[in-house]
Amino acid sequence: MSGHSKWSTIKRAKGAADARRGQLFTKLTREIIVASRRGGADLELNAHLRLSVQRARENNMPWDNIQRAIKKGSGGDSGQDQMDEVIYEGYGPGGAAILLRVLTDNRNRTVAEIRNTFTRGGGSMASAGAVSWMFEQKGVIVLRVPPEQVEEVALHAIDAGAEEFKQEDGLLEIYTAPGNFEQVRRTFEKGGVQTESAEFSLVPKSTVPLDTKAAESTLRLLDRLEELDDVQKVFTNADFPDEALERYSQE
Image (cartoon, rainbow, N blue to C red):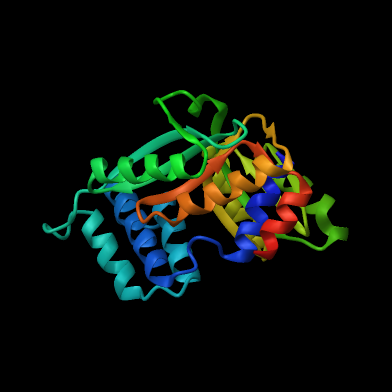
């Protein structure tokens, strides 16, 4: 997972795709609406909602906006838009699998935009189930830990219920089963460990190595897909060579 992990790390550092604040707030609002619709408005009882609200606060989204989104999703606003959560699948240049988690109020519009983006980027859409089996849902907690404390923190994570961990560019990535995610997250929260991010993610079971040319084309395609308003998250099993990632980080 090293190439995929490095892409995620660099993307966080760049603030790619969601750099435009208006687009970011739109995506965060949709996330909160769907999370509260599915699990209720209580942050203590709804882990997905709590994480969505946390991301919104970290990105300086006004509290009034957050409350309105929760109200819409939990049924307190009869004028709420109907948002559908959809997974779209495809392949990038070089054959790497790509999964998109989408929130949309118009599936026809969204699928047309996604198909066009795949085509222009040298990839192709796939039928439902074609690549989703290559991924599994995990809780992913990213910590910033001094090198001398990595082993201690990692073992602490395993004791708390984590399944595995990976160290990448000064960050420690902790992977958990969905059911253990909250327990592990709270362990670090109570311990005062700095958390870079904590979320539910679709993690590839194995990766597909790409040559430099295919990797650079795939990275550009991933960026374009993330820039679509209806696309909330993009996942891939691509393993990118360091040369391509270095160029990507400097763009």
